[in-house]
Length: 502
Ligand code: HEC
Image (tube, rainbow, N blue to C red):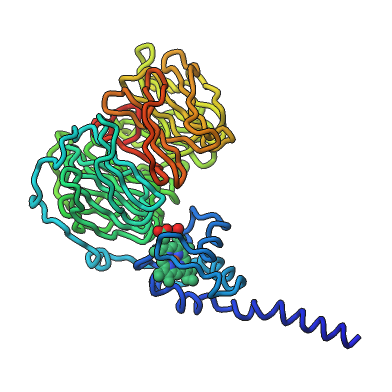
């Protein structure tokens, strides 16, 4: 009996000991992590470690990073330093918001500003011979790099390090010279593609969705999740113009889901995640004459019935075609500031997932349906569903180009994630498919400037950009890349091709 009690006592102690040691993850963090990730968890040499920052990291991945570190980076393994229970407690704690909400005000933004090259100090001509309009930038998320590709030779020109975890598509100035990028942790960077050099950087927040650049080249707008702000920057040197608090009519704060440049309207559009409003921020009048900065600080709120989760615009940026959280789609007329039609759309998987084109003399839009293995095609004159095209499985993007008869759809969220299907834009039939590497995720198509070649991503760490002849569907080249999650062609983006998002 006493032996049993003794045994039970030992067992109880064994259970208690790690729990006791792991009781104070904040202290463990202060001792082992704060030097690199910041005492406030907002990041320093290493990335920010707030629940929002770690959203995309699955539980198993988080445990593995703490245990094994990250090879070839400064993140050390802690398996030998900390007990398993301590690591578990730390992982749980990192998923918990700090007691005081993180602040990042105008003063913090200004203090982070870095100017590498003063506006006008670099030569206004490319340092390479490639067509500057047919460049691609490829976001390599594996080791946080960007590759500049020559779209004519289909070969890299340059590769450079970016901030940790770029978020949202990079955006080009209208002449294609500059590319603006936002990182998950709030850094906005301006890069000169002609000189292959960073121009300026600034940290606008702690967790950022994306940036938009005004068509007149004067402004950059960043949309944040943390804090709940929009941040307006001068595009020339990224200096701070203004912080705009994002709050609804009764003062409730909202995260920003994305910001866009509605070039034909001379305005920015901000989609809000927590309140049923879309904001329009004009930067020029109807004739295109620049508005004074003070005018940019009065967003026009378009009040909706439901929060819009994902949406895109028609080509004139007159309408927003959106999917609401409750399911179903709606059309919002930006001019009238109200809903004008419902859409028979299950839901969109992603902002900018769809495209538009001309069919039988009418403009149609098409997008993958959230969670469904099908593409919905909608007539944009009267908003009726023209067709639903069954595919291999739920996917993320549909992509095309004015000069190709086909639209390419992935099935990234299905067992057939290794295969892209090619749909004829007139017959609305699947006419072919490509499987770059059996078993490996293939997605995100972007075309060369002339529409001749389609560039597909193999998404893994040892991935690649696989180039296809867009007419014959034959592979013509394979360029090794480190998790190439996106690629963006200067011409197609700056001319706002109907076959891609902008
Ligand atoms: C010597 C500096 C250093 C120390 C100490 C350090 N880290 Fe890191 N950590 C980094 C760097 C740098 C990265 C980014 C690695 C990469 O490029 O993927 C990172 C990445 C991470 C990530 C992955 C973040 C993401 O979004 O992918 C987590 C989680 C993390 N660290 C947690 C911790 C914890 C918890 C501790 C303390 C127990 C710690 N780190 C200590 C430098 C450090």
